[in-house]
Structure formats: C-alpha cells, structure tokens
Image (cartoon, rainbow, N blue to C red; front, top):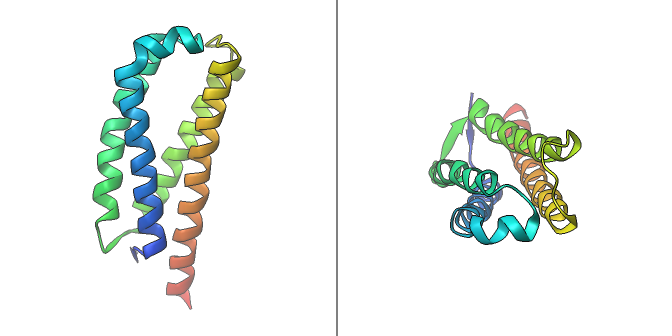
Length: 133
C-alpha cells in the first residue's frame, strides 16, 4: 500500500535529513578534534559520519516524493530505532569508554534520533489511519 506524504511527514523527514547532514559533516570533518574531547575513537566518529551521508541523501529523496510504499516509511522508523539501540548499546556493553561529555553526546544524539522516529511513526500512522477511514 502506498501512503501519501503529508506536509507533516515531509517536514519530519526533512528535519531528520538536516540533522543527519549536519551530524555527518561534524563527525567527518571534526572526528580528529572530537575524539579526544569526547574520549571516543576517532574511527568510530568518522565512520558514523560517513554512514550518515547516504542516509541523509535518501531522506531528502524520500521527502520529495508525493507517495511512498508504507513499508519504506516503516523502514525509516526502524533504521532510526536501530541507530538509537546501537548508540546506547555501545555504552551499555562497554564497547567504548567515553568521558562524561562523550557519554552525553551519545545519549543526546540518540534521544534526538528517537524523537525523529516517534514523529515519523506518528505521521505515518496518521496517514495510514486516514486511508482506513
């Protein structure tokens, strides 16, 4: 089933793209400076930024569509949820040993991504419920 992209859902996708693009730029360009400041591995920061580049591009492309398959939109929510789980998981599992600022950096960006996932899911459900009515 295809879902019409509402103005709200389009805005949330674009905000996610903007935040992801800014974060990608910050992590790619600033990994060398951020690593010692946050006590996080430079490679982790750099490659997380690199991963965000195609994500940003995809979100921009999706936001420009008039309608998309419902599953694609659920996939966007799922990828955001996985990013949150991975971000918090590396802290809980002790895979990194950031300082307080580094831990806050990870948690705050995870909360922001979770917020995008919640807003995207709300926008998607509103559209799907509208189709069922």
